[in-house]
Image (cartoon, rainbow, N blue to C red; front, side, top):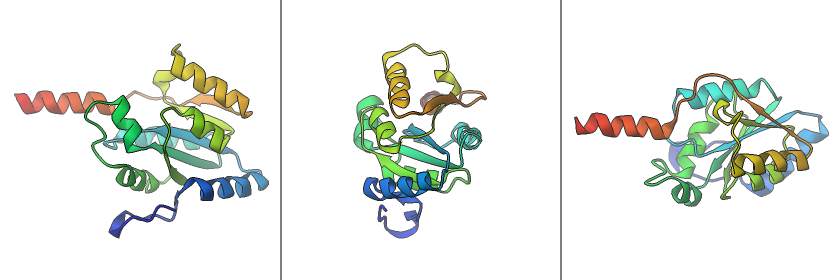
Amino acid sequence: MIKTKGVYYSDNIFDESNLIKLISSLKEKNKIIGLCVGAFDLLHAGHIAHFVSAKKYCDVLIVGVTSDKFVSKRKNGRPIFNEQLRAYSISQIKPVDYVFISDYLTANEAISLVKPDFYIKGPDYKNKDAEEINSERDSVKRVGGKIVYTSGEKLSTTEIIKHIRKFKKN
């Protein structure tokens, strides 16, 4: 588990070695495992709705929170909250069972680690034909899982930040 100071500690945040042990135990019990991966920076209602919808596919929902170093490589000026705060916030959402910090540039390594029955993406990825999502689809197939998509309206942290910055200028 990640040891954080003060109020940002949670028993359901795991490091990779403990996560692997946990997953092995869950699979022995024939639990259906779902995986979501993302930055989940500036937590908002869209994230929560995504997790609520994702939980419908599985017995156990595991969320990989992308590490600070990789969020900063992909999103200019981000993350707003560090990985431990983001992991803590996600760990407190009711449908989320376990959280780990995904210290990878892409989700492919997290998929290989967790080997989920369902890799769960947001609705904006459903018909997307891009190298990254196609690679994730291949990774899920390699571990014997299936990619599924939640439904609902897309809310974007990036768009929320743009809106705040625009409002701040006025």
